[in-house]
Amino acid sequence: MLIIIVLFICGILLEKYGSHKIPHMNRHFLISASFFFAVVVYVIFTLHGDSMISSSRDAADIWKTITSFHTKNIYGSYVLYKGINSVYPYIWLYDFSVILNVNEWTFIKIFYCGAFAYTAAIGFPNMIELLTNQETKLYRRFLFVVAMWYFGYYSCAYTQLMVDLPCLMYYVLLINAALKLFRKKKGILRYVWAGLLSGLCMSASGQYTMPAICIAIFIFWITYKSEQDWKKRFQMLLVRFAPFLLCIGLVVGIDFYFESCIVNPLRQEGAWIPTGDDWLQAGLIRFNETYRQGGNASSLPSYRNAAILHDYYGENLVNISAVTVEEYVHIFLKYPMDFILNFLNSFFLILSPDHGSFNFIPLSIFYTLLFCSIYIGLTKCKTWEKIFSPLFFIGFSFLWATVPMLVMNIEPRTCLQIQGLIMSLALCDGTIWENIHSVLMNIQKNGRKEFLRKMNRISYPVLFYIIFLCICLMHIATLYEALGTDTQGILINLK
Image (tube, rainbow, N blue to C red; front, side, top):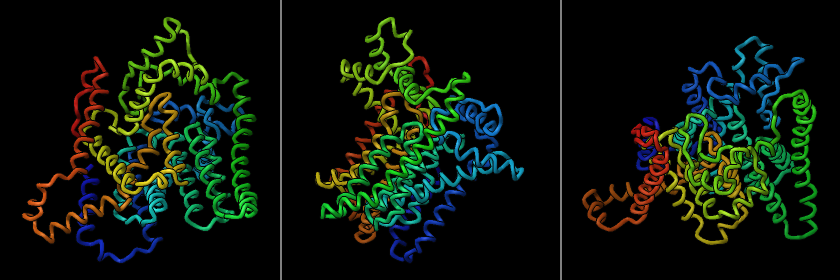
């Protein structure tokens, strides 16, 4: 928390006094420095951890499969329903550590460190650069790295053996690959790279399947629109988009082969390994009384969702362990407004990284960043044409990544992508910083007394921000009051 405040103050001072004096940084130095800073942040806060399976049941279970993979008796972990991403590249990294006779976690931790460093120092800031055509300054990258760690570490995604951080990295890599196709030269190798990343996203637990399809539509559209003549368009699709699809098929095919040759035989031997559809159908009913649970977060009840299912099934609810998608849609159509209110509450909780309980400071900081990102979005997208440009599919893919959480249950580790988008837009884009710079220059030019005299006029953005912050804090307080008998859960923690 203190580091965020110090970096923010340093950023303001740089905007006021030093932004015009600092020479333009070499691109490679900027990337390297921010990546190194992210590595340092990761190492400092994970030095005390000896194991990556200490607080996650999923991690402990899949680790048994990884360590027994090259034996005659492979352990059939239920986490294998997540496909090849559940065990690769961990099997290779574990084998490498055994060959070199070093700690079994050494190379997996290095992989996680690199995944976090890329995502926080390079991936999201570069994405904002490609979206806005403005370079992200070094101190903003530093600030975003700290914010990414501060709002994500309690989810255990950075420190426990899960698919979430690697899949987030693949997803951010995919978006950057797609945006480079949009902004820069469309080489075949870029399509191949984007296809491989799309396949990896489609072969994960399911959260990034539809987002990857959104990105595929985006790539198809920009490829199709890159030529005016219909013959050249067909040629572009055949020469460039076809390799993209082939690479997707290659990775998805490997995942299918993995399930056929490794997972299915384990199922036949008696291991309980649900399919992706089984997990979805169970998830639609299993968390019927909560909005959020998992990780280090408080479980927040959803009495409305429980009431819907009790009203629909009656006493038979206790005997139901799974719901098909078709039946779920039927229930939704019977109680549409109740479901919509549930979804809105869930989406609000996705945008409320509270460190697991009612913590005032992280909530206030993130709601401030959320307001800034909304303000930036409204500033840059003032026409329908800009909103529904090809870049619409990029933003839509982030929204799609939240759908599994809306219909099932929220876990903090699954919210990192949409939270990262909001934080990166607020911190890496220049809009807010330029406004701060303008205010500081105005104070320096006209003096504090003149500035305070002009402050008699109402600043509507500031007024809207105060109202927005109050509404968000009141609503999260209301959701925490639903904890009922857990009276400690509703107390504000000023940390």
